[in-house]
Length: 115
Length: 109
Image (cartoon, rainbow over all chains, first blue to last red; front, side):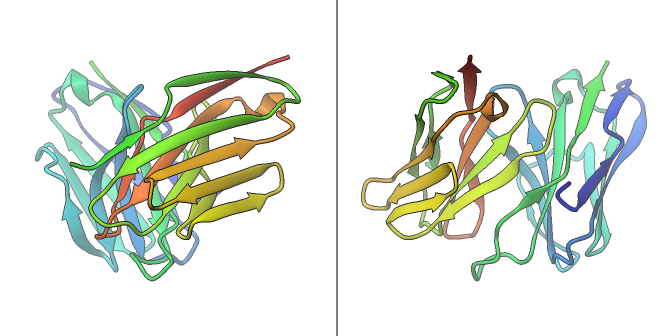
């Protein structure tokens, strides 16, 4: 248990569905991240929020829409996804960005299958 | 470009020692992380090196050479539960982690 929870753990959706992934951290951290993990590929950073403000968007398609209502919660809204979006979506948090407090702690992930 | 290289898969015997290597190229450098990830689970933090040298934590040690862009993770007295993927990640000048694809470690009895 890392102090970062994600729901749902598994999700199957059609290409026309809309769904949301939820992440919550209980560590008092200020930065939160969304990553995509595909088999045998490096983790791909999608979005970064620091103090609820989005600081990075790594050229992610608009069918992925993040939301950070406060520093403890992070959502990823999904709309009209493609089969190639099937992957493990990981949420992480860190105390801060920089200043020696960058260690990221991960949630268990949501395994997404797009049919 | 920025890049991390680590072996795709390694096999070792229970009770033995294994060294997992990682080389990196980044724009600036703010440290090197190792994570362990069991199948279907979250990556968990193992170590962080920012200065040259060896850091030891129980059965696990991590080494960094900044001049060579090289790190390794050393696992001693291997146990079956050490079977997992080991992820190497280097932090660039923007404090963004550049990840390797992971090394799958298989432990045999």
